[in-house]
Amino acid sequence: MINTPFSRMFTRFFAALVATVALLTASIAHAQLRVEIAGVGANQIPIAIAAFGNESIAPQQVSAIIKGDLTRSGYFKVIDTSTVLTENSPVDLADWKTRGANAVVVGSVTKLPDGRFDVKYRLFDTVKGGQLSSLALASQPQFLRVAAHKVADDIYEKLTGIPGIFATRIAYVTRNGREYHLEVADSDGQGTQVALRSNEPIISPSWSPDGTKVAYVSFENKKPIVYVQNLVTRQRTVAANYKGSNSAPSWSPDGSKLAVALSRDGMTQVYVVNTDGTGLRRLSNSSGIDTEPQFSADGQSIYFTSDRSGGPQIYKMSANGGEARRVTFTGSYNISPRISADGKTLAYISRRDGKFQLYMLDLTNGQEQRLSDTVKDESPSFSPNGKYLLYATQSGGRGSLAVVSTDGRVRQTLTMQAGDIQEPTWGPFMK
Figure 1 (tube, helix red, strand yellow):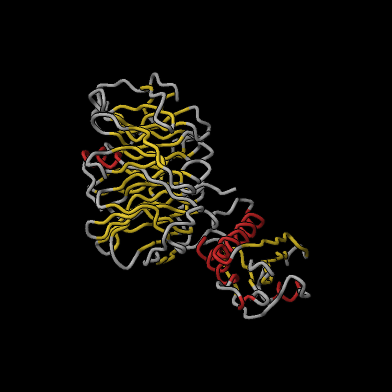
Figure 2: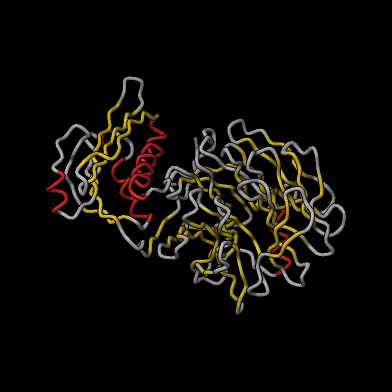
């Protein structure tokens, strides 16, 4: 991981790459992420997940993936059981309730004649004494994990009222020696795929709203250039290649434009450009450095970092440009704004007492909360349901990834056996 002095803040905006579920032609990386979990939610839901009928025929154990997802969330207490129960088995809800389970999951896996696997499941509520949900998902063998994640998403939503994010993907950059990889993985760190290899730095990957493209900055031509890459067709388009720095791409909610930071006219300022590189328009006009633009979820505003007040702080302006309003006031160094989907919460990195740490600001009441206890954090990214934050930090002297729930109770660390992990970004819900 690179140190983060003020100059580093603006250097890292020279890149953004993309990754998606549709990387069917990408090669599988050798190193999987290892996930360590700490902490639990305020009110854990006790749930029994039976072994699925006939799941030994499948390349992945579906019930184990579901258990792992729900455990990792921190909001479920999985009750150990080796019982095999299919969606057609009689389920004694009163008995499961006496065993301490508020919910029971049963299901099966069947291999179809065309080679796909049919995953069926049912969710029962032992408290109210009835069925809450059921699903039937047919998937190719290589997408069986996705089917299991979708089941876990359904369970999470039915029991919490919040959409699950287990079937989403994350993207990040790994560095091993002089080689950089842009990699994509399931939200649990499994199923890693390489989207891009380069001997030059890759930074700031940014997912398109539909999860099929990535905007990124690549130094492969010995200067920072913003690209948009279709991850299905592998086609790349240059979105910004002007003199000076081209950096920090951020997608508009409708996927038609990018906010970028360019130094083409002198000091780095915020611009907007169509994803094909046309229609460049300048938005900010300050005597300082304006960078790290991020669209709000409704597309009406842009948050960005500027040193116009003497040190880096976060500002907000209309997506059409114009006067900017300062947002952060606590601390002398606040960078890397990320706004939640509901527009109510701002995440950012703040330097205080020599530590770079993850903070969250409630924009409705001005209450600030520190979410990390590490000292070299960067690149925060909200989960699409707004309940978790992914960010880069250091673990054992190497770059690693971390996930923390927005209430600060649940923490995960994602590490790999060799190399540094940097520049994470959490992908959108996939349709």
